Image 1 (tube, rainbow, N blue to C red):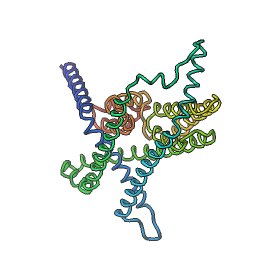
Image 2: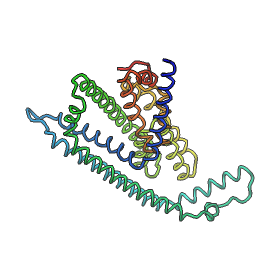
Image 3: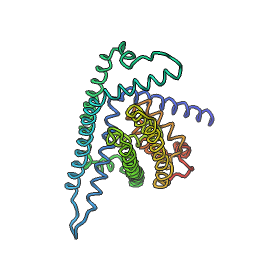
Image 4: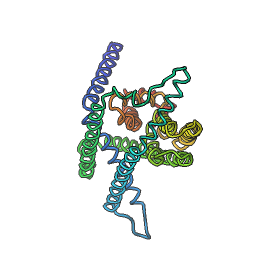
Length: 347
C-alpha cells in the first residue's frame, strides 16, 4: 500500500511538473515580462537599501530619497544602453562597405584552398536572398521588445506601489506565528542568496567587460565599447554567454582586419579573460552562497532557455535558486533540493 501511494505521488508530481512547464511555455508573453519586472523591482529595493546605509553624522538617507536615487540610476542605465546601441548602429552602417570588401577577400582565400578558380562575391552569394521578410521580422522583434519593456515597467511600478502591504498580507495568510516566521525566514534567505548572486555577478561582469574593452581597444577593434557592453550582459548567462562573448567579437575582428593576427589576439585574449575570471575569481567570490550543482545549473539553463528563450537563460540561476530554497522547506521536496545542491548541505 505504501509503495502504491509513493508511485501515485510520483505520478501526480510528474504530471504537475509537465503541466507547469506547458503553462509557462504557452504563457511566456505574460510570465517573462513579469519575471523580469520582479528582478528589476528587487534590484531597485537592493539599491535603495544601499543608499539608506549612507550616513552623514546622525543623518541617514530616508527611504523615499533612496528609492528616488535608485530609480534615477535605473533610468540612467537604460538611457545609456539605448544611446550606446543607436550610436553603434550608425557606425555599423558606415563601416559596412569595408566589411564587405574584407569578407570578399576571405571568401577568395577559402575558395583558393580548394583550387576553385573563380570565387563568388558576397553580392553574388546574397543576391537571391529575399531580405524583406528578415526586415519585417526584425521590425516586429524591435516593436515587441519595446512593448515588453513598457509592460516590465508597469509591473515594476505596481510592485513598488503594493510592497508596503506585503507584511500585512503575510500576517493574514499565516496567522500561526511559527508558520509565519518560517515563511519570513524562507523569504529572507531567498533575498540574501539572490542579492549575493546579483552583486557578485555584476562585479565580475563589470570586470570582464572592462578588461575585454582594454583588449579590443588596444587591438583597434571597431565598436569596442559596444562589444564590452555586450560581454558584460552575456556574462549573466553561465557558460554559453561566455562562449558567445568571445566568438562574436573575434569574428568581427576577422572581418575587419586584413591579417589573422588581430583575430588570434582577440580570440585568445578574450578567452583567457573569461576563463580566469569565470573559473578562478568568480568561484572564490561566490563560495558556497548559491550551492547549486554545476550539472543542475546547465540543465536549468537549457530548460529555461527552451521555455522562455534568451530571457529565460538570464533568469535561470535566480529562478533555480528560488526553487531549491522553496523545496528545502518541505519534507517531500527536501530530497530534490539536496540533489540540486552542490554538496548536499541544505540550510
